[in-house]
Image (cartoon, rainbow, N blue to C red; front, side, top):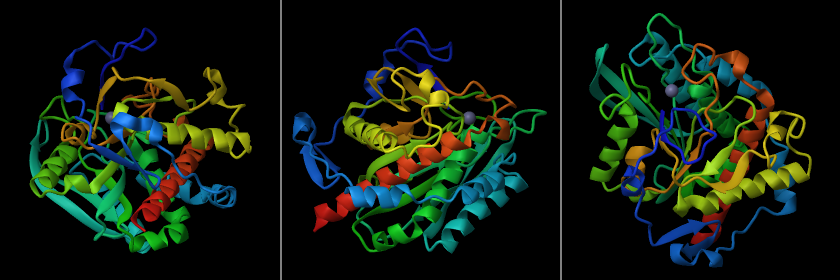
Amino acid sequence: MRGLLKLGSSFSGRFAWTDTIKKLLPKPRNRIYNLGACFELEDVVTHNPSELSDAQFLEYSNLSDKQHMREAIRNILVPRVVGTGNHTIVRQYIVQSLRDLGWHVELNSFHDTAPIVGALHFHNIIATLNPQAERFLVLACHYDSKYMENVAFLGATDSAVPCAMLLNLAKVLQEQLEPFKNTNVSLMLLFFDGEEAFEQWGPKDSIYGARHLAKLWQDQGKLDRIDLLVLLDLLGAPDPAFYSFFANTELWHMRLMALETRLSQRGLLQRYMSSGVSQHDPTRYFQPQATRSAYIEDDHIPFLQRNVPILHLIPMPFPSVWHTPDDNESVIDYATTENLALIVRLFTLEYLHGGVAQTK
Ligand SMILES: [Zn+2]
């Protein structure tokens, strides 16, 4: 992805000022459904989320599979440029992993042309627990890696770790997710293809898969099925800081903040205070400040432009190794990765349980 702008002085030159952000922000939907409560955007104070009970919270917090996380990262952490043999192998690994866990998986395949490499066959991977569900929480990332001349770029944070986190979520929560194969509000995992530019980032050379799928689903009238699109990107390096980018999903960002606080108060995060997170003030991953004016181009943009609520889990600033050969296994902090994966798992369960309460 590319960072276009950021208000404030502490970020590097990837960010520049622009006025276009206002035009690109979604018109708010009338309603957002949140953890069983339905609130009007104009009246957010009525929002009253139903948190996990202490018993549920402790039970779910103790679930993890660190060995699987490492195995998944290892399987994805190869150069996987669109059109190469490795790209096919990684795609097949993701598809088969999810099918083995009982997910319904389909490929959204299409042809497009890219600079340098020419005609390509792209494949977005769409995995659902219940393909018949009316609405979905969507967790998304991209599985292609960036083409770099004469460099075997691995893209550990970009985005092997986010992909592994989603596969690990499916594995760790296999039993807990089983009921959501029959609910109206269910879970979708989306692995975009062709996020990276081949030559130079631009409207026709980047986010190939997301552009195709957002348009297709709009044409098919399916975009309304997305309650919330949570896009994970550039994760795995220590010391990330996340901000709320969009007003209409700020409450969801606050849910992530609340989960992080609840976990840290119970001492359930690994190396939390002693690791890089303590370099931040306040000492946390999910920051209380909103960053409305930070505009980052990523796979969410074609959906954002079509009014889909977006939660963008991308650290600001980006990891220092971003788009360099150093974005390899050595940058991965497994404690941070597990902590973030845990927060996302709890968020997912809260969301899905809220959906069940709402449709009863
Ligand atoms: Zn990238």
